[in-house]
Length: 120
Image 1: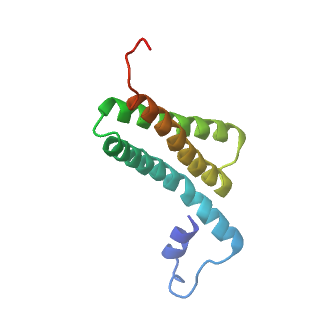
Image 2: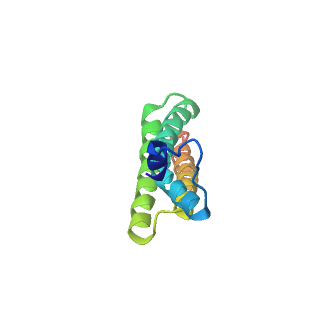
């Protein structure tokens, strides 16, 4: 908002906005769209990666992708309830993405490569 006002000002070539408070709020204004884009990219990478790693097994890929997405959305929901949106929140979301893929992919992989019948 402040940058748009400065661009409309006749001083736009001679003045600039600087300060720790302004920088802090500008970063916070950009974090949420960046987080949503990162979640989308994360989902696509998990989808493609799981599809290749599980040797084109569509069911295993969908299970991994959906379980990872559910964990990330659940952590996002709980964090929105109790925390303010800031850089720590952003780091929490990235940590949840890493832990979600770690847990779900190993669990699905153990079932995907298991031998035996359904009864045993």
